[in-house]
Amino acid sequence: MFSGGTIPTPEPEPELEDEEEDEEETGLDDEINECPVCGTSVTSDQQFCDACGTALFRQCPVCGRGVTDKPYCPECGTAIQKECDVCGVRRHSSEEFCSSCGTKF
Image (tube, rainbow, N blue to C red; front, side, top):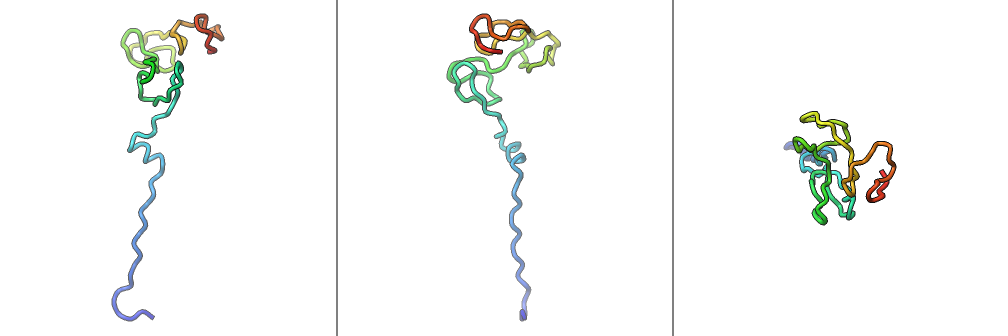
């Protein structure tokens, strides 16, 4: 039996945060990719490869906003033509390989 005083209570253990929360708070959720030209590791927030200077995302030719794989710019609505990721030559939708550098699409 316990005599006198208060019963000691254990200190609560700190709650572990989910990995997703950590990534959001620290900004570590940037996806790591490779430069299509030189293979250097790059993060998704980089605009250009630090090693060779290659543009890592396409830009709208009218407003300059970065665009994804959508056919139109989300900012100004300009039609976006697909280009080779390696050499930048415009490609036709029916091509499997770049007519300039031979890269497979």
